[in-house]
Each structure stands twice: as C-alpha cells, then as structure tokens.
Picture 1 (cartoon, rainbow, N blue to C red):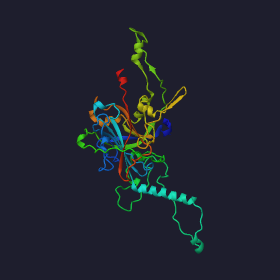
Picture 2: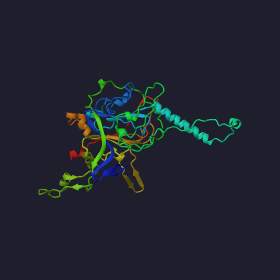
Picture 3: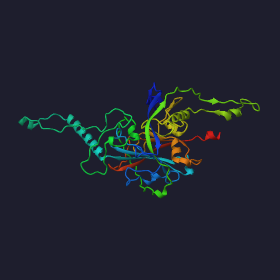
Picture 4: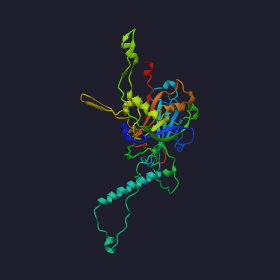
Length: 414
C-alpha cells in the first residue's frame, strides 16, 4: 500500500496537491466519454453478445438487478489488444440490503484480432531468432561456389507496448494497422477515441503471463427488459485528476472522552461515560476529509492504486489494510481481495463509488429505504485474463471482486 503523499505532487506556492486518482463527476450534459455512465441501462461491447443471464441476478434473491455504474476501462498501454468495460449492479430489494451478493461486478473484454496476430508474429520471430543464434555455423555451398550470400529475413517486430512517458491525459497514441480483409472487430487509433477514465490514468505495469481457467459455466440468456426493476437516473461522467488543498494534519487523539458533571449522579459517572464516550475513527475521518475537498465526486479511479477506505474494521477494510499483526511468533499480513478464480492471479484495485453517487442516482427519491453504503470498491484481475475457450474478436464476461462498506448503524443506535 502506498502512503498518502507518495501519489501526489505538491505545488507549495499555490498550496495545492495533485494526486494520481482520477475523479468522476455526474453530468447531465454529454461528455467526451460517451460510454461511461452512472445509472441507467447498460450498453454492451456487442449488443448481439450479451453476458450470461446469471450475472444479472442478485445472489441473495436471484432477481434481476439494476445498473449502478458502467465504465469504459480500456487500458491501451497496459492491455494493448483489449477493449474493456466494467459494470456494477445492485439489487433494489430491501430484504437483500447489507447482504453479500446484493452488489455484483462484471468485467467485459474483447480482444483485437489484429493486435493478437501481431503479438503472435512477434513471439514467433523472436523464437526463430533465438534458434538461429544457437545454431552452429555451416558451410554454404552456394556462397562457396558463386561468392554470394543468400538473403535471410530480418528478425524483430514492433513492440505492442508504448515507450512514451506517463501523461495525465490521453498518454496513449498508438495507431493500430488496418486489416487486409474484413473483420468482426476493428481497432481505432487511440488519439481518435474519446478520453476515458482508464486512458487518463497513468498506467506503467507490464502485462503478466496469462493462465487460463478450466471453468465452464452453463449459459443463461440475459433477461428481457420487462424483468428488471426501474433503473436509476442516468448521468454521463466527466473526469479530472484529484486536487487537494495542502493542510497541516491535525493531531487527533485515538479516543476522546467527554466527561459530564451530573449533580444527581456525581461527577464522571460510569453511565455518563458510556453515553458520551466517542471513538474518533481516524480511517473514517480521513475518508470524510478527503471527500470534502471534492464533495461532488461520485467515482474514484486508479488502476492498481489504493482505495480510500470507509473503515478498516470490516472484512473489506481488512482486505486492503496494510497493517501487520505480530503476536508471539506469528506475523500476519493482509493479502488483499481474493485471487481471480479464472486464472488464479491476484486482483488489484481499480475504482470505487462514493456516497455522493447515491444522491445523484436516487435524486428526489431518497428515503429511509434507499441505499446506505459508505463506498463500493471494485478489484479486478491484474492481468485482465480471458476464459480458456475464448475466441479472438468475441466478447467475454467474468465476475469480479466487489467490496461494499456499509454505513455504520451501530453508532446511530448508541
């Protein structure tokens, strides 16, 4: 986990710090990213190839859910041949609230057959070059008789990964070559595409080797629109890097006890302490203070970064907490979200929804039966893996890890 100040650059004269986190804001007006949206109805990479219907259903009640978020998650620098979209769905039934499985996430991927063929050619050329390097020299009869050297094909191919430096906005400008014949999926120059959340974020990790899964899932048709509950309000998403006002961190004691003098019960009675004792949760305070600097944000995006935790006390907080517990001879370190069930590799943080998203989604319909989460965190496969039986150019859909940190109702009851 990275310390707060490690992902930010500070302009001391202006007193402003810019972080690597990309913030999303709900907009009723069209934005340069026409795919990403808050609420509404999902759109697919291929409308004729929708996800398995099981992804649409709440794990608790098995009824269709509604869309909370759809993001254009294409990362040309990290996964150059992958077109990605991320979806978060939520169950609207009150009986499913606060239950695991009532919020789900899907990662959709479609690969470019052109980029894949280039990658295969590159690998094949590299292997041949390596084989030639290990071969023993031999006598070329034609060269001996006629004094000429036969021409051999040159080895090497252009790398799929850009060598350009990080840039905050649209750092990926690699143009894909056009296919010689018809194709079911075509690639477009990155500079011609609208800037998306993933493109604006600076990504520098290399793609690891993929290990496909042996899982096979029975396909269920995506439910018809008539089976879904009424959708939430829909907004386009506007994005900009997070900026923070540089302020000295106040010293906050771990516990503050308010002691009240009650003539009837005496000074500092046990009952008074139980009633007025309040533990200042530094994690929640950090969460609230950070959001307060950009209060209208609905989304925080940083692939491979660290989420802003609502609490460290629940299972989600513990999964991302960097704390270490040493007890006698045992040292325990948190391992993060569960590994990807498809390939077995680790999952990494990609984005989270903030409480202001509830305000935008529910509009004037906010009531006691509305959503009451503090944040929803999405972690995805670090290598953007594909199913074992994936066919290049088609669309794959996989479940991803979702962590919901609910509002703490215990404090309201005390």
